[in-house]
Amino acid sequence: MSTKEIEILLEKYFEASTSVEEERILREFFQRENIPAHLKSLQPLFRTMKVESGIKSPVDHEILLIEKISPVKKNPFYSNRRLYWISSIAATILLVLSIIFLKERENKPLSNNYSPDEVQLALLQTTEALNFISLKLNKGTSELSQLEKIDYTRVALENIARLDQGMGQMQSGFSRVDEGLGQLNKLSKLNLITNQ
Amino acid sequence: MTANEFCNRVLPLQDKLHRLALRYFNNTEDSVDAVQEVFYKLWLQKEKLDSFRSVEAFALVITRNHCLDRLKAKGFQHAKLETVQHPVDQQSPYRIAEQKDELAMVNQLLNQLPEMQRNVLHLRDIEGMELEEIAEILEMNPVAVRVNLSRARKFIREKLIAIQNYEYKGD
Image (cartoon, rainbow over all chains, first blue to last red):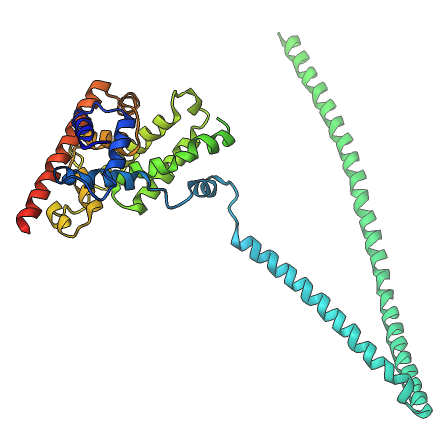
């Protein structure tokens, strides 16, 4: 496009009567380096427009919007608590496993490395210990006899049930009193009539 | 409008809305905040968006209003819309020209325009919109848009010529 044509377009441009397409031609023209001296002053305008129209949002607003509208926000306390639970269960399992493992390692040498005498002694000691345990258990059983006291309490509770019976009797007594009062009332009314 | 349609038709406007907000705030941070709030507002009324002839025009109107409100709230302007000035410290365009920062210089000149003229120039020369579309967004008639556009362009031309002459004198 010749300089003359550009000048004509520029004239239209400043009267705001160029089309979008003509303005695009002008903008492209001014991106060049060798601009006629008398048009040079306008170059910053068209170059700036080109740059500015290429500016993009530095963030993705879709992500920002989703963040803003998502109803459930992640609760750090909740997830921490869950983490505690999981880690405590894991620790327990680890502890049990290591105890089983250690026991198994302890048990192995028992049958191999001890003399018959030692085994005998261990058996005796074990028997003694078991006896001791059964003795204590027996003592515990005798204390269970205290449970009999519960029976006394049950009897006492039965007495309370009798209260209910008494209440029933009282009620029927009251209703009879009521009846009697009604009759008295009638009598007094009769009295009144006869007086008149 | 469904969430899906919102993603396909409204969210792609983000660059355009960002550029418009940038005209008002002259900094990226405020512009991003503004556009974020605009999208939230649009999201809340997404059922209503179908009733507008142009969702884009409506989004631009919301952005403009939001920016003006924000500037008002910040106390940057106390007069009518027509005289909204930019909050940035007005550095002399001549000084900037000396620094050979073409972009900053032109933006400085754009900032000196009344809000209406600046908007018209922005929507036409940077967004390439038709005068009728601009008229709809700014609620003016197309003739008034043309007048404002012509004035804005001539103002910039005058200033640019003055700056060039100053530079020559300086050399």
